[in-house]
Length: 472
Image 1 (cartoon, rainbow, N blue to C red):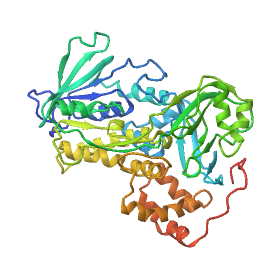
Image 2 (cartoon, rainbow, N blue to C red):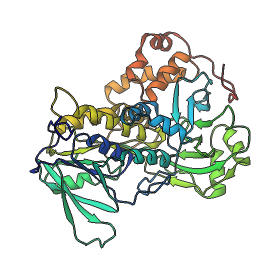
Image 3 (cartoon, helix red, strand yellow):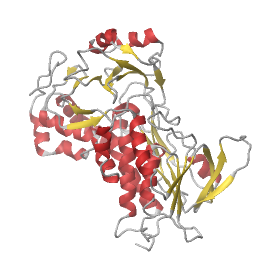
Image 4 (cartoon, rainbow, N blue to C red):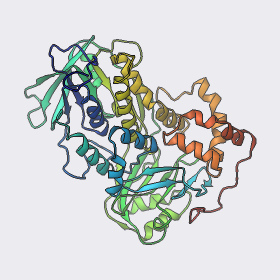
């Protein structure tokens, strides 16, 4: 450590100043957490945000799906707690529902109801706006971090060998208005799935990353409700029908911090859920069983329905060989975007920030741009394998990564047996939920007790109807 308390090792380089400056593009969850990590290594961190940050718990304009359900998976919880100690206590104190799986939910997939076994994992289902506000409040108290609001990044400074900053434009001004340069030793793109970084890199002579894509055409619509007593109260916190190749209509209801529920329904390309009041409720009838529709008959709508259709999986391969300049990193959705139906985005944003921290702090490896970028990609790999692996099997899926690799095809038989057992088998269910919530590696599915159940035992009997109460 040097006299300023910062780690003295090089992490960006190329600047001609004694002061080390990092720029983070985007005040998203991924951007805020990256800035928090970089504040331990830089003398100054500037977050450039295209919108005005909201005051209090309000949706941020830049989050296109901010009004839709979000969950914080267990892998993300662990990462956030490591980055911001005490955060989970703050989240619960703010009222975010902590929902046990599978005991607190009525779940259905591929023709089977899930047993409501004792919970082996928990998710938080509060609003995205609430979680972001808590993170923003913690992160922006650091005097090292400054935010430029209502400011667009329109390009990069530097050349194909090194990025040396960003080119800015005030959003309040004329689109042809004056541009200004902001020099930096490191630029981190956390601008989300709509990132323009590939174009920026091409403009300075570098190579845009190869993009792997899988798009099922899934679209969803969400609406806020407050329900009567009965289902989704007491022992039942939520209800969900998962999509699959045999069941393309999905949906459910998840609790928010104020006692209301966000109801979501989804369909594929050409059969998108409507947002008109009556049509939204009618669309819920396409789910294979009626509990949610019956609940809606008595529940009070608190908002209009909002639709969302940008659900493709996109992975930008900055780790592959090519003209990728030093001093530039991508993280969050700017690196890897997942179909939101799997609820992985917030967890991966936190896990990526943790990977950034660990890569910069490694005691024996110099944190070169390529090495750190590989660490960021590795942090998102399991989530990609889950979402891409499921989506490439959906009817009508398109994209550059739809074709399964030989290794994927070899694993399908085993994974199909896992999925047939996890709704009712405690051992297989525990392992599979741990993998899905990013709290255990995929290898957990091959542990001896799980493998014995998968290979040698028939699938256990599942409930004949929706289980009303958890099992003791």
